[in-house]
Image 1 (cartoon, protein in one colour):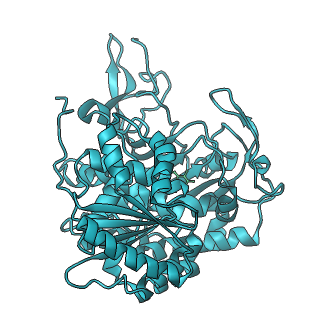
Image 2 (cartoon, helix red, strand yellow; image 1 turned 45 degrees about the vertical axis):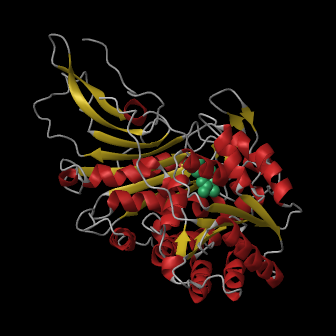
Image 3 (spheres, protein in one colour; image 1 turned 180 degrees about the horizontal axis):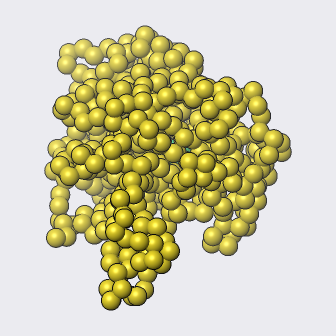
Length: 520
Ligand code: BG6
């Protein structure tokens, strides 16, 4: 049954003002405004709603609306409703100010009071930090200093903190300390847009709403798990950030470990935010920290050289990108082998890889099952090939869906086997709705549901796991960079990481079934 007419019947969020710090920046223009527009299209924004942009740029409410019209509207996808967009733009107001100046916050206090009067927003404020991370702590202190963190007379005040949340364990701890000095934990919403992706949220449904999955989701059946986030893009115009971050900090402690935690967590006893986050925290704590020796053998870093992408485009080396040092040692690729010390996962490696300038955009989790005891199917029947193990692939993007690789008999007189795929694709069942991944997260924050946001302990545990890697990598700078060609699947060492265990990376493909055998 195709279910394109399924409606999401979430109610509109409660009245509020969304204050966006860094309102003229890329994130606001490319993601936040389109997300608000999609929420509005779905009738999930409150009637009594206002957006207050704050930044140092010289705008007023009128010119800020023009900016949104010229620079944000272009990022909308799907059906365009002029009415909905214009209503949203009319909700926008602007305040110019320096994030570190207390006068900005006095002006903010005044402006918010006026907007409450004008729009009926009841003193509920969602503060969104879409600024460079260096401002996060200062903004929180200033908001609180102006009395804007106090929840009086039944109103709520919430703070959304973008990534990167710190650049190592110590800085993450310091930021948490600052935030928790000014706000209660329940007011803090540390965002990871991967948790806003429908397909990632579907992992909960897939694992815990299907009686058939959980019994085979453990070390008795699973051989290993691969999590891949491959991107064809290079560093684009983000060198100043990326040079100090690198692929490890940029992707692993946040997005990839968030995915791993949902894949590997124990079933929660309820869908209460803390029940879910407790289980995620537990599984992260169960990951064995790498020893310095293991960092050498269980991690791989790479940097792209110039090359030709699959579409034929010639692209420069990372070191030739604008803003990148000619001798940069920043990694643009990372692969890791992690082990989870738990009853469920003992002995099952989790291989993680992510990189820029890889051959395509593939974000997926592959769960490879153990080989069937296939004594009955002799190699001759398989034309010399061993029987393929079953493989479950959860595709986060593109072609969002889930497939299960099974072995089938090729029609004909010979007993010949071929791997085939059972494939569920979101589009087939639910159609394709435009989304930035931020809609659910903004909506949940307005509703006061922190389930998909990170708690302080989760963030710190993730950084703790990265510490040994960062330490060893710092002590031993790479000597072979650049070590992979743009358009390839990363350095050879990434393949060797799995070959050493008698395994190999899944060949990600855009098509449904990678291998087809003709009738035999
Ligand atoms: C961001 C990283 O958090 O996630 C980027 O900073 C990366 O470097 C991006 O490209 C990937 O997100 P998505 O949603 O495109 O997979």
